[in-house]
Length: 210
Ligand code: SF4
Image 1 (tube, rainbow, N blue to C red):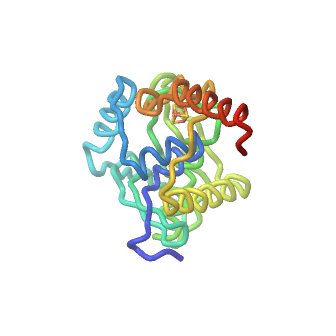
Image 2 (image 1 turned 120 degrees about the vertical axis):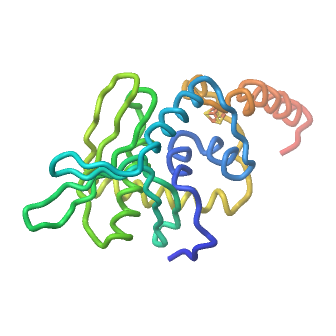
C-alpha cells in the first residue's frame, strides 16, 4: 500500500509502456511538448470533460471522474465512466477512455484503462470485468476485457513506473520506429544523443577504457 503523498499520475503507466524515457521526461523532468497531435488530444479530452453527468436509458454517464488506488499508488481522472443498471438494482461501472488516434500495436492504452478500472474497483468495492477505448481517428470503440494477463501487466507497469520515478534517473534514448510518433521527439533528440554516445563509446574503445 502506498501513502497518499507517494501517488503518481495514472497516465505514467501509458507513458511507461510506450517508452521508459518518455515516462521519465514527463514525470521526472516535467517535460511536455504540445504538438498538433497532443493539442488535438487535449481538446478532445477537454470536450469529453465538459459535461459532468447525463443519463441514457439504463446507462448513467459520469465525465471527468477522479480516481485513486493506494494499492497501485495511482491518482488521475477517467474521461468517462458509464454506470450500467443491473437487474438487482446495482450499477456496474464501465470506464471509457477517449484517444485521438487509432488502436496501437502495444498495450499502453489498455494498461491505462485497466488501471482506471482497478482504481474504481478499490474506490467502489466492486468487480469491473470490462471497459472500452474510443479512437477519434477511426471513430471506433474497442471493448477491453480486464483479464488476468492485462491486470498483471498493469500492476507490473505501476511497480516499474514507481521505481523509475523514485530513482530520479532518465534512461538514455533508443531510437526506434515509435519515436516518429512521439510528442517528445524534439526534446528527446534520440538520433543526435545516440550518435553522440556512439562517438563517446568509440573513443573509449580506442583508448582502451572500460
Ligand atoms: S523520442 Fe523515442 S526514445 Fe525519445 S522519448 Fe520518444 S519514444 Fe522515447
